Length: 372
Image 1: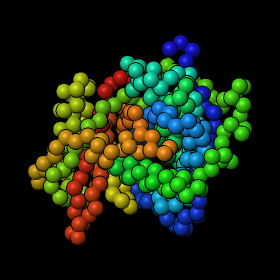
Image 2: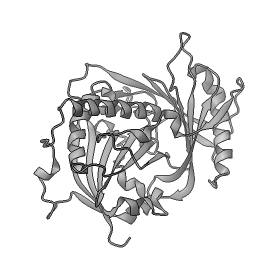
Image 3: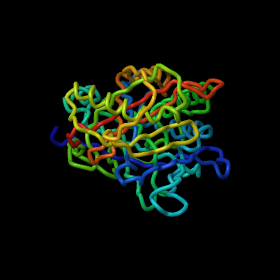
């Protein structure tokens, strides 16, 4: 691996092509202060593709994505928004995601390695952070921090990856995968209707000579193994088999899911003893965040849950932005808050019925104790 590097080639901001309605926002109720580490909690998904068509390239795809993403964001403008602190200036109270059209960050990069060699790495999971860019949210001035990044990485020869990093304050894993599917559909429609040109104006090769590239930043492949506040994590998914309103389910869900996650994750070699969690109760138009300790026992109705997998969100591996080329591999991860704390995210992936009930999917994440 000596000498292998990832090169950042460009940064762009992608905003909705149509201005968002004034005042549109997603409220976040924080029952406890949001720490600097909690602000970095995020869902990461990375799609790996081999070249399937002669005209296919990561450079062309990134240029097309720049255009189709702006169209897709019209329906979900909050994804291009920014986090705002409580109106009283304190750490408690009502935060919000303001749909201010500040933009999603689109990153273009290249890696000195073939996609097959990278996927064969024994420590690939520890190195994947290079393929999904993230800049820490500034707690004091979050208005200037992006919450959603899309990175297109060119591998040597003919492979590329699309890495997504999305703050859990912005969207839960189900909400994000739902948007990615919608974006892929928009992209395909624009391509079939001739709105995505084979010679787009956002093509990076217009501004950079590949024989003598000007990189913004280069990082060695082992860069991701250096200690940071982010720790390696293990995540499991659960599904509630009964219908409950999320607000009614929360008191008993805390202890049940957290205890179940720690127990089952321990069977997979993860470090035990995690008792403190951030709980994200995610609904379509709002989010509640609270800190919870497993030592605090609560009474509530019995909740039957079962272990499920990422396929619960649909066949995301079939998502394609290049004429039906399906991913050869998809990697998922929830990045821990740090400080030895876990994360529990409660999601409502199915449409609410007439009484407002819905089945729930829960992700439970604990740090493994190994820094990446």
